[in-house]
Length: 405
Image (cartoon, rainbow, N blue to C red; front, top):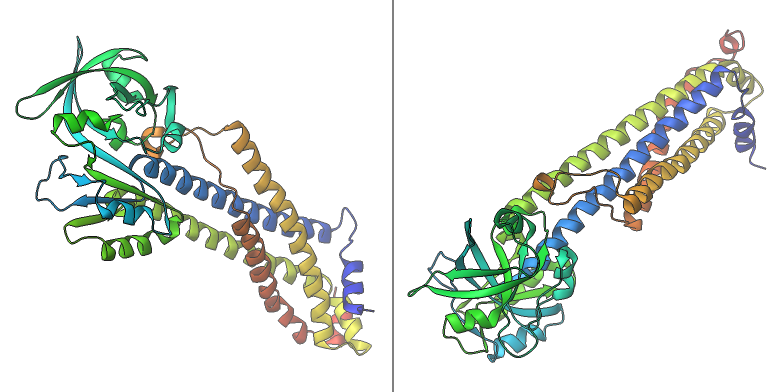
């Protein structure tokens, strides 16, 4: 029989109106609130990273392969899809998908407004499924007919600025010598929440740019590469750069849009600091609670010592007692954190300003390994600090403690 565990169970059931009962509740609440906030912070941060990364990748891919050029405009030098480099990239183990795109600067003119845009031409391999996640009205373009498609997708911001709706027709003046004009029909309106794209980017058929640039159908301006694991982005970029031709440049999404990923990194660092502070406060509260419980049980400690109990034996009693309080706190902390996450994920009750946060509601990402890790970390750290208050037990003398009141 584990006698310290038996005694800890007996003293862990104080009367409902006693001081010990209040201390027990404070301990459980401090642990549960702390863990609940840590879980909420973790799943929200994961949601931010996943949502923003998926949106960015849907627009530009994980890696972009272009030809070296001294030109600082959006104009690109052509890459041939018939070249061995295209098949080489497509056959790499870590590459999930490759699509060819090209860019062209132009102006949209309506009866009331003129607006500068970047026309992004996409080929038949364009990842429409991923891009379709940001379509708020209409549909994605149909560019698989074999003929140039004059359908385009525009952002909600451009649509509101130019007062455009689905099925409206617009003229785009492409900036080149001589200037050329093409007529398009709006079939889709997207909302990315990212100002860099929403202010200027239009999605259309790459064949339009190929005609404007007098390119063959096999020529593209950029190869957008999608990989299987975002965590291996640096390794993939390094290997792809090493194995491609000397005249090709490989750019990764985290460098191309460094300001957004730096912002995510800053938010992640702040969350880490928050989690550390919460864990420290929970540990400090647990030390305080156990010290109070030890002081309240001074007479019991004195009696146990008088009948021969060792300091180690008595420490185990209060350690078991503290572990029980921690376990109850973890249980209710998970209830708080997971309930909040479920409600927000299902009903999206907390809105955000998309201008500042790139999305219109607080996102949630269920990463169970991380949630379990937070539980293990909290349990381990707070249990370890229980050693500190139990050191007081060795200072308690039986004669004085039995008369303690």
